[in-house]
Image (cartoon, rainbow, N blue to C red):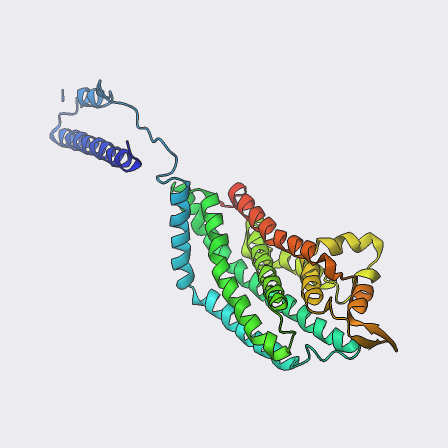
Length: 345
C-alpha cells in the first residue's frame, strides 16, 4: 500500500471519529437542555467510550509523511522560495560583494605582476588578506540573523512532524551554494583582471576555488554559531572571538615562521591561514623571477617559502584541507541543529 493511500485512510478514520464525537456531544448537550441528563446521558457515554469491535488503534507507519528524499526536496524548495523573498539578506550581501570587488580592484590596480621587491609582494598579499577577512566576515555576519529566524520556523514545523532536522540542515547548506558560487565568480571576474594576476587557467581556477571555499566556511560558521547558541545576540557576541583568531593567525600580520611554537597549532587550525596559503602559493609559488628582498636578490618562489612558509609543491594538500573546512562546519551545523533545542515553550 502506498504512503498516499495510507495517509488518505488515516485522514478518513480521523474524520469519522470526529463526526461521531460531535454527534455524541450534540446529543448530550440537547439531553441536558431537555432535562434528560439521567436514560439516553450515562448510557450514551458508556456506549461511546467503547471502541467498535472491528476497530484498530490509530497507526502511522512512519514518523513523517514523506521519505528522506521527499523531505529534503520539500525543504530545499521552501528555502528556495524563502531566499528569493529575502532581499534584505541575499540582495544586500550580493551588492556588498560587487562594491567590495570594485574597491579592491581600484586600490590594487595592476599590481599583480609588478613584483620588484618584498613590499610589492606584501601589497598583493595584503589585498588577498583584506578580501578574505572583509568579504568572509560580511557573509558570516549576514547569515546569523537570517538563520536565527529560520531556526524558529524549524522548531514549529519539526514539532508538527513535517520533516526531520537533518533535511532542513542539508537544504539550508545546499541552498547557500549557488549564491556563494555566484558571489565568488563575480569577485574573481572583477578583481582578477583589475589587479592583474597571471593569466593561467590553473591560477585562475585556484584563485576562484580558494575564494569559494573561503565564503563557504565563513557562511557555515555563522550558521553553526546560531545552532550552538540560544539567541541571535549570543551568536553575534561569540562571532567576534572567531574573527579575532581568523585575523591574527591568518599568516599575514604574523607570518608562520615567526609564530611561537606554543601557538603554531592555532595557526594550523585557522582556516584563513590555508586560504592565504592557497592564494599566494598558487599565484607566485612557482615564479622564479628574482626581486630585491631586504637588499639582496632572491627569487619570488624562495622568498615566499622562507618568509611565509608556503610551499608550491604542497598545494594539493593545502586545497584538500581547505575543502574540509566547509564540509566540517556544515556537518557540525546539521548535528547541532538536530540535537540542541533552545525553544522555551
